[in-house]
Length: 404
Image (cartoon, rainbow, N blue to C red; front, side, top):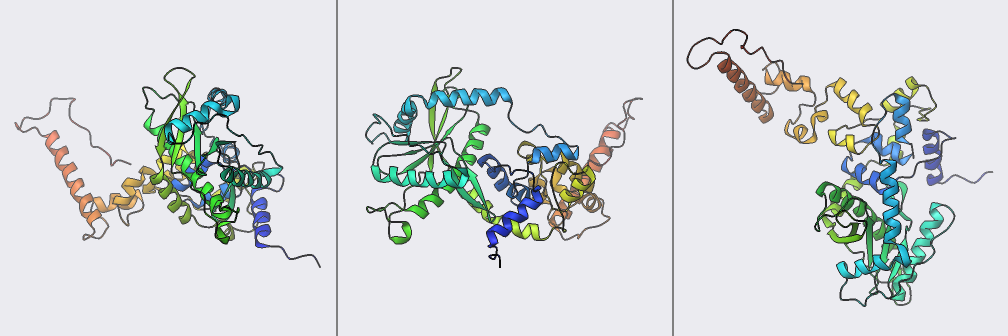
């Protein structure tokens, strides 16, 4: 008899069927995880990312291509800047870490850069964990260039590759994020810094899982055997070009708030296997299927669209069209949705504002009717000036339709 299949193998087979047996999985990176954590109520993104579906190809096949992504020029410029930062065994990078985060430690004379090459993401993650253990006990500056970290996301493993992780002489670990946007007079674009902080928070969470598994006691004992869990620093180093040059400069960024939010949001994600179990038999997201079949498959998974998705998800245009067609209030923004209580569609909101529906004791309904009354009063006042004289010909305001 063949050996029984473990739940992990069953899940991987199920996700491969959803993706398409001949379609290779797309790796889930920290940028995608940060966007996923920002919208934990979207089962569609959680399932597609967990199954490794290429959402850009899927959007093209659905007829709603997205402009989301990085330009080739920016990609090449970022790679060139990162290579400069890590040149000479990472001497400049280690100097910046020492200057900005650990000035009391011994200056890094010559850092250690271990070889992290291995077969497959699982092999690289295991090799990274071993290198972290060795560097922690060595009590020397160590630079891990593009390590591989594993993080459990909704029951499915995600393999993440930060730009660098530095191990300090005291055994603590620091995440380094290298970006190509400039730092002008010591400050950078707050929106871009915030995105980098959220991305770094994902790496810190993954490192904390590695630290909890490894430990770093004097005899190299694991945490489960009484060893000391390594300290993952919550201040990351953001390295950017200085002013308009290609010279690197850096700033320490405290990501404790982003870490707490990301951890809470990832914990709220519905497990991927639970979402997959609700789908009809034979559901598949292979991009070579007919557009009608793909649309049916995508629409079988609930989505929660918000305007913020336009900057974070390749399927945003498709989901926006569906959300607008259904009149969902969330398409106007999460802040507005939170203020409308049980009114979930634009039709319900307009009916409540005009007095045709809605609980009169509901504070949201009361506010809507008051706003509608003020609007009507303002329109009447504009049509009839306070002097009592009629509006000149051609200047009367037309009737304004309800805003949708």
